[in-house]
Length: 278
Image (cartoon, rainbow, N blue to C red; front, top):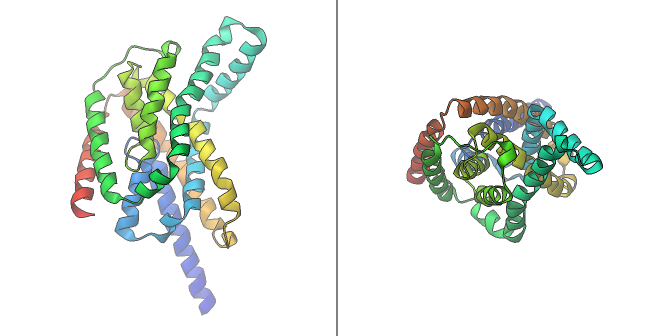
């Protein structure tokens, strides 16, 4: 009898983790803030596992795998051309050599800020009212750039562009500010074409996500009774990966159609509801 109850509770826990993995996967690529939505769910349903930092690590890793798979050909080409240019100095490889450095450069501002102000960010991460306010800011930012066309192609991104977009990414360290939304807004403000902006945004996600995972591995390994959660973690990671892949593809199509305004309206509505009722 007791064994049956424990088994049922384990299944419920796994389903809860899978549900949260789905939420993480859906919200990570689109400009509505995955961290903000997970905090909203925590307040609404009292999901105790959202106090589990390891969940964030494994779910984020699922999203990382999905974006890597989605952009696998471009990633391989960038890395290959980077080393080929170092070896041969041929102009054929110069564009991706430069692009690789621009990805690194665009990652640095958020990386430095995150390390310097980690404690402050962690303190703010449980303030659901702040999430509501951040969603309103996101709504305004997306509304202001929803009709922007952009002229710059991939080979026209400058060092200044990458630094400024990287500075915009700092905002995403705070709960409720979408990372993809912040970087795309930054990119559109620098006159990048929409497809170039979204691709660069996803490229900037990869090193940040990888660094988060590496920094969290020690905590994951040292977790007490991790064996009791390993199955739930795996299912959450798989759910996050699958949903992130399809959510990212959907978002790319939305960008191509110029429908960013929908996300602005969504963030406005959710932000108001959070401020009023949570």
